[in-house]
Length: 203
Image (cartoon, rainbow, N blue to C red):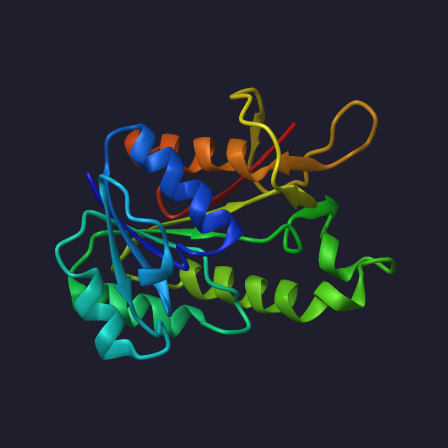
């Protein structure tokens, strides 16, 4: 497939690119300075400011799938979906956040007393993004939330899939490596199981 990755130069974007190339897909790496990425087979880099809707839609045209890894405080749902619709791309997958996952009946992680202030603006913007997608009438979207701790690590291929609730391991730790997250995202692209849904991944 032809996959466009918005924010391909970031920590998650580079791992998604690696996983897509590993599986033989053609990737268009989109970022403000994507041309600084190392040249590699299967990857075309495009320097694009994603907040420029016309430039973004032009870069997305001709792809089968778009993955957005952009920070929610920098690029909102309307900006992304407008560009995807304009480009005529049928599928949008979004690197979500953990803040909007439930930790109890009717309680989301971002609303708990100990949620770090440093991450709250991004988490709230992520919740807004998800809510906007749920009202999206045209695009086949999927929003994949990581677990609470989301850092570079190992590619193990062993993880659990959930829906709306925060996943934690037997010790109570909620975490997923960016490498295993990328596996879950590419699995969803190749074998769609969460059309117009949010799901989550964790150990």
